[in-house]
Length: 398
Image (cartoon, rainbow, N blue to C red):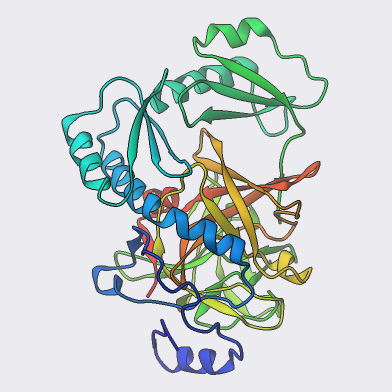
């Protein structure tokens, strides 16, 4: 069993009960993605890949592996504070596009040179930096009273630094004077506000992709098993799935833990629990098919991803792939992706569930599901895993 990590007798019993843990390496020959492993000791672990994935998705992901390796090096340097002028990173067909206002620093240019060992990197001129767009968005939010329950409900930032996108309820008139005053281009898209997307029987150590029920019976999905620097174990999920301190159970009312640390603005939360593992459910509701989570990485525009929410599994769809990341993010770093094959991207009850990419038979954590649009069922909104790492100091548990 590739990627099996033994964590005591409970872990052994759990893996014996999983009848269909996915088999070994179906994407032989893929380059490894530049992921952030759970720890230095875990960096070399491998995992498994499902047999039901389509060749089309495999080929798409295979082409992106070297691009993601290059992009991850650059994003890592940006996260270390070398971000003056940074606007965003995009995965094009055969190159990484780094959108930057002005000339990148010498240290960024050095990292770019290192990244080109994996894939071509092109620095493209951005009219505005990410910091400038965030400042403009904050001004616009105050001026227009942008809130989820208001006529103007969302603001998005262009990854290429070209401006902002305001989302408003259909027929809402947005004052042009307010848009002009922020000093960056703003376009308006009329779309109803997103709605929160609040597996049957998991057991400790808890995995991602399983049903979660709060004490009121509201269903969500577990995201990933994570740990912090003190080796405390948690289930990462969406903050809107339960109130602070509220009891959370699995799909058969087995106690998981009480809702703990949370960041409501980012819609992420941790459930302290006895133990977790490095796997996520990716199959149907009752077949127990799982995949090993290798580590985590940032999210890039143009990237191909999958999600494995409990409600999607309940509908018999297993994992939902073919999710391509759009070229806009919002102020709280949430990301959207579009399902390209006319499938429903996400369903009610998938909230908090794992969003991930495939990498040589294992998966890489990318984020947790937040919301959907009722009239645009092909769009999924999720919070990236990097934000959870910044907020809570967590990694994938091993």
